[in-house]
Length: 113
Length: 115
Image (cartoon, rainbow over all chains, first blue to last red; front, top):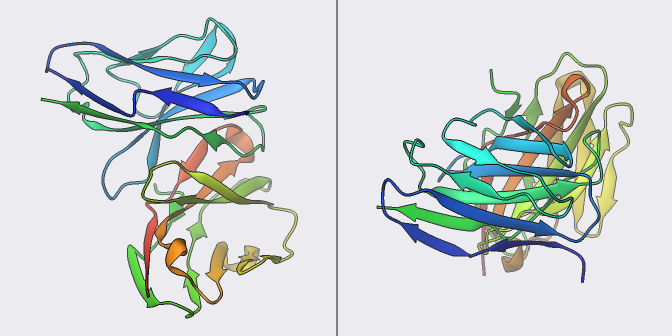
């Protein structure tokens, strides 16, 4: 069964703690993406990666970090520097970064108190 | 500047009604790609359609149809004979030829279909 998995579905953290969100895909896609969604908002791009060991900042990268050590994995770390981390986080992948549609995982809802 | 505008924040219809979701985009690129995604209550975005800027043919897929008009920079989505299962948030999105891989989303339209 090919697809994108994100774990966990719900995540709770105390303010000041770093937290890492998992994203794995078995679609053999080259490109992977992280988005943040807030209530009533569209998705905003945090980071994206076109190839292993390479990634670029999106529109709201401050307070976040990523790594791409393997083609199938693109974990996102929400650091304590992110001022408003509570949100719904979606991971996506696509065959390449040209015109291809992106396929999304089920998302992780992060709550920081 | 917002590149994709979905002016309708919420739409409510009764089952079997037809409904059109509006999308207006903005780009100076001659090559671009337009998308529609559905986000059901579960949260996962489901890809519905992709359209290239050089292909203005309308598309029909079952009860879904899309009207792409470059003259008005619009890419509207119509659901015919709506069903309760169509209730979701629908997003229109754009990839510009000059920034390939960057998907710009509208704010979405919440569609509620009542039985």
